[in-house]
Image (cartoon, rainbow, N blue to C red; front, side, top):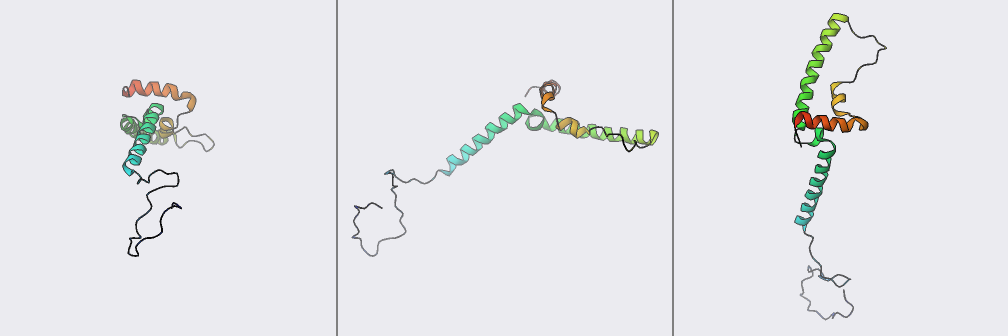
Length: 127
């Protein structure tokens, strides 16, 4: 409140009115929630675009096809493992297990990521 403001007011004055002037002299404005939401959506889209470039197999246009291929390959791998277990028996207890299809497809080491991106674009098309 300004110090030079008159305090002589009528008693029935509405008290629910807020001051519309800030201490720095500028007028008070309501927050523009639509602008905030648009900014958040724009930030999300920017992050999404960056993620697609970095990991197209997770966030790209063909991620669903890659996921379906992973499911299909896992089913085939289970059938192969079951047939090998029937013929040769279960693997020895001390033998290290080979990585699963999910680990091979989704836990790609950073040093192999460049080659994986190249293979993915060749296999599933350009992003």
